[in-house]
Amino acid sequence: MENHPVIAIQDDYPEDFAWCYGCGRLNKEGHHFRTAWSGDETVTLYEPKSVHTAIPGFVYGGLIASLVDCHGTGSAALALHRKNGFEPGSGESPPRFVTASLHVDYLKPTPQGVVLKAVGKIEEIHPKKFKVKTEVYADNTLCATGEVTAVVMPASFAK
Image (cartoon, rainbow, N blue to C red; front, side, top):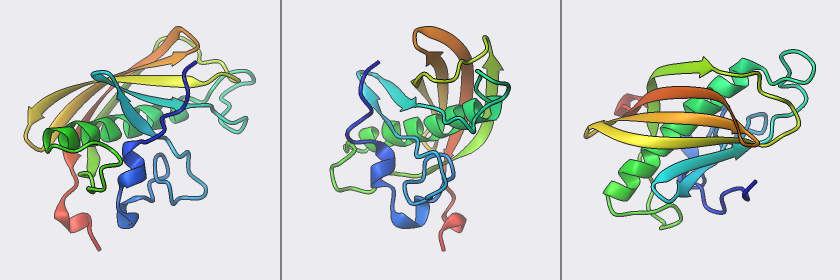
């Protein structure tokens, strides 16, 4: 399995928007999902903890949904940031997205004790709306697929 991303889009989220339970770097209790480019696709790697158990030996489906969700919004942020001429680590704050819809299909039980890899493909469907199709692998086994429609965070979300 490849290494975790060195520079992820979540590393550049402004502090006011870095508290998400799934991907917020400032949420001490959160998952700290980190999403980066891998060629023309996006990738998030995550090793579930023992508390993320559905039944012994298998990952809780809610964690997988959370991974697909945050991977989708992070992927949309990567895509719009790149479209605007920037990459993670450029010093420019990326756009922040929220989830308009989330769909997950569970294909196989997801085993505990392995790193999960979410791989995303991005489709722009509006200047402020992106669809991200995600595949979640445990080792090389496809365990889940998902789709997120992500929209640019409304200004009303700011403090």
